[in-house]
Amino acid sequence: MSRIRDRTEDLKDAVRQTALSLGYNESKLAAVLASFIIHKPRQRSAFTKAALKTLESIEALEQFMLKHRKDYVDLHRTTEQERDSIEHEVCTFIKACQEQIDILKNSINNEEANSKGWLGVKADATNADTIAHKHGVVLILSERLHSVTSQFDQLRAIRFQDAINRAMPRRKLQRKANSNFVDTSKSSTSEPKEPDEFQPDRLRVQQQLLDDETRALQVELTSLLDAVQETETKMVEMSALNHLMSTHVLQQAQQIEVLYDQAVEATKNVELGNKELNQAIQRNSSSRTFLMLFLFVLTFSVLFLDWYS
Image 1 (tube, rainbow, N blue to C red):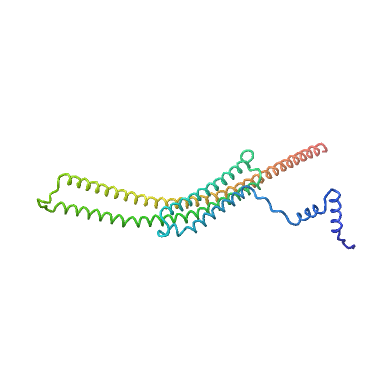
Image 2 (cartoon, rainbow, N blue to C red):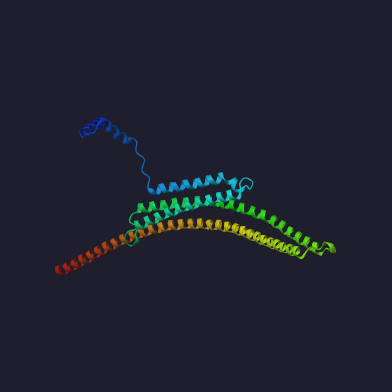
């Protein structure tokens, strides 16, 4: 048995000579050979770039919340205006991330609609796998955004609860001050005055007007405080409902993912069923041909035997 000869160097020399004859110089030839060894990174698609950008935005939102967590919750670190500014920035972040996720969903829906062939049948199985992968990416981004918004809802609930706790004792002090003022006014009007202490009617009318305005202002402030407290309570309830709604939306997203998997599996089962039906039709046609041939041969044989006899 003859030995195997290594012709690798001969192949390299032949390739080099052919490249030089085609006009390649040494530097260009070295660059081509290096490109075969070190592959260039693949270009990312527009969907991948948008998904990574959305993920970076969600991570930036999470870092912002961690940075300003104490400033938002602690009442002695910042003022109400600063906490409102933090809340406004977080809401803007969340809205922008949600808009980016919606854009990704719309792009997937458009791609899925364009990938369907005649009568809504999917033309390519590879494209279906890619669309399923993109749906998974969008679901992961939605879950990540939901976890961040849940943390912010908890911080907002803590802030509103502190505001309610601060408003309750203030309201009690206001009512106590109102009752003390009413008692003082009653005692002052019930005391008998000496004849030489009577003031002119004009001063008494002015004092009565001032007292009426003071009482009306106190009633207005009390009603305004009640309205503020009611608004704060409703805001806490709205925050809780928002958290509950986001939880239900996440559950629905998981159910939609399960339904999508079941739909993909059902499509595969339908395709397998169609293949089995085609095979059954072919077997039926072949058996029918064999039966007709057998009957023809049998008939011909009977006729031949009858003629022969």
